[in-house]
Structure formats: structure tokens, C-alpha cells
Length: 280
Image (cartoon, rainbow, N blue to C red; front, side, top):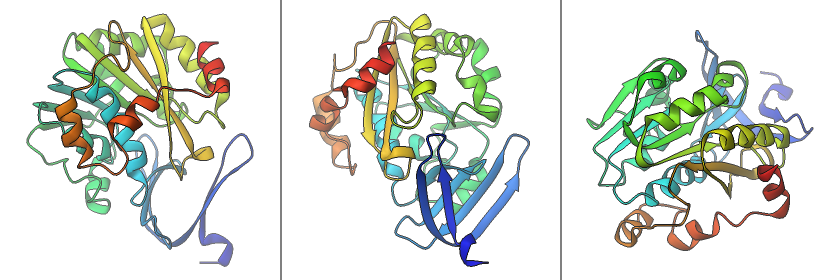
């Protein structure tokens, strides 16, 4: 491998990005939907999962993302029993969801599950849990006839391109809303506030056509564009921060590297520029 090939590089449309030193490519394949690769980095980040040459997760910093997408909405529900994870085939979101003892069933709808189980066992460690039902199918089709089924829906999707485009439409968000039980909450990853301003504007304008309550929360992620990420918290009736189970919060905090009650409460305090983007 030539010297210039020893780095994974990702440059955003904004003209900046990241570089990670590599040892080797462990897995590379074009599936029906996308290019899937597992890279062994020569860094503290360990192995890397990329889809269509875009960063999805690293062993070293995946918890920055997975704890935030899971525990913020889960803790805002008094008793989440049924959870749907759309995307998230690496298993990290499922792993975090199952830390909540109230959970009886998690449905995971994605395509890269077996690769993650083989190469990313610390992230995919709960995918064989009997509470997990795996659907290797198109989430856009799966969600169409699921009425009043889930307490929490987490959209752990790729960026709005290629197979991920259909997960950023008014029709899809409407089907998601109808799939939630009364008092249900949906959270979707909503891109980088510093690298994807146009995408955020478009996404939140669609969400607000569907959900009466739409809020944004943020947290750093070292290997994502700009090192800063946003998630959309959506519900018909539930306001963010309106409820936190104190006992469950204590239990979850002991199992996390980032999540705790104070950090949770601070996530919805937005910088002015992002508040402007999501309110447009």
C-alpha cells in the first residue's frame, strides 16, 4: 500500500474533514444497497465501519453517538417497552437501548448486521439478545403498516444520499409518527450543524409538518464532520426534559461513558446559529 493510501480521509461538502491512519482493509464489499468496509486503523480508534466511503462508527469513539441517540429519548419516556431502531446495523444503538430494564422488545431494521457482528463485536454485542428481532429489509417499506406499535423509534440512518434519501421525507416521517404509541418519541440523527446546514434546514422543515413537537439536541463526536452532531427529538405530545426517571437515570449512568443527568439536561441548550437553522 502506497504511503498516500495509508489514511482514511473524508472531506465534507464544506471543504474540511478528517484523516485517520490505517493499517489495512479488513472487509470491502458492494451490497445491493451500498459499499461496506471495515478498516483497521493505526490509532486509538481501532476498527472503523464506513458505508459508501463515509464514516459510520469507530470502536474508539462510537459511544459518543450511541449513548446520545438512545438515552435522551429513552429516559424521557416513563416505561419504554417496545423500541424500533432504523439503521444502526453496527448494533451500538441496540446495545444502549437494552441497558434499560423496562425494554421487552427491540426491532432492528438494517442491512449491515452480519458484518458488524463479525468485525465489531464490542459494538454489536447485543444483536443476538433474545429481546432483539432483526429485520434485514427496507425500513421505508417496513414502517408503512406498523400502527401504534412502538414507544420509541430511533432513526440511526446514513446521510440523505443513496439508500438513505428515503429516510428524509415527509411520507416516511408520517409513517413513523403513526407507528408510535400514545406518548411515543422519535429521535433521528440530524447531521452536522457546522457541515450540513442546508440538510438540517430541509430536515427540520419536513419534521415540523408532521410532528407538533420538534426539538434539537447536540453533543460532540470526534470523528464525525466538524466534531459536533445534532439529533431531532420529535413527538405528538411529549416535550423534551418533561420527564426523567431518576432511578433509571442512576442505573444507566453507571454503565455509560458520557451520559448522566446533568449532561442530559444541557443537551437542549442550543447555540444561536443552530437554533436559527432548526427554526427556519
